[in-house]
Amino acid sequence: MWLCVGERSEHGQTDSSRWWWLDDGGTSRRPLAPNIYWPGWFVTGGFPGRRIRSERHNQKVGTMQLDEVVGRFHQTMNEFAKGDPEPAKAMFSHGEDGSLANPWGPPVVGWDQVSKALDSAAARFKDGRLVAVDGLSRHVTSDLAVFLDIEHWQAKLGGGAEISQFDLRVTSVYRPEGDTWALVHRHADPVIAPRPPDAVL
Image (cartoon, rainbow, N blue to C red; front, side, top):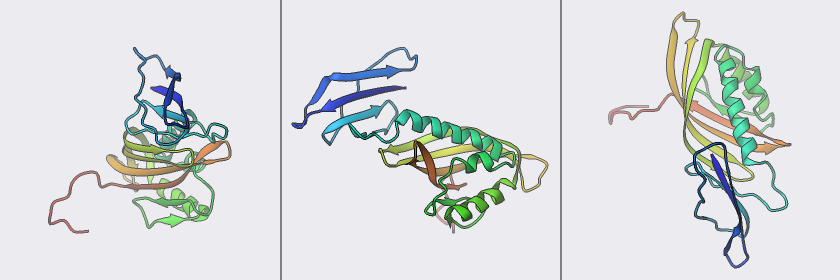
């Protein structure tokens, strides 16, 4: 991963002397042509589709921290797939506007209902894990982060004795809360392939 940070003047010119690069051991460092449409500081990262705005004097939560939070959430899914929802629940927003839509029931809003829905869903899993996550798209600002992923799972489901493999398309929405990011919405369903023209809902 690499990051490029710079400053844009009031006249719209980028001061390249303020650019800096950060890599994590890759073989090269390369600049990114700016794609900025507001004055002030900009931060943009080396992932497709990532463009992050930060305020010069009031940056809320850094992108690196967001990546760490998302990584921790994916780790909690391993416990979830074994029937334990508590680590994942700690990553969710506990506000009354939080929401969850999973394959096991109707969408719910508010922490009380989200918590119960997570408990109910985790109870269906045993001896499982989140195998991999394919990131399709991400849109990040200083106030909100939206991810579209395909999650690959395996677990024993519904009391069955055999391990099942399944995939979910997932939309996740994070927002800053305190000094970290919290998951304020998650939507997961098993539709990941085209359906025939005569398919019905």
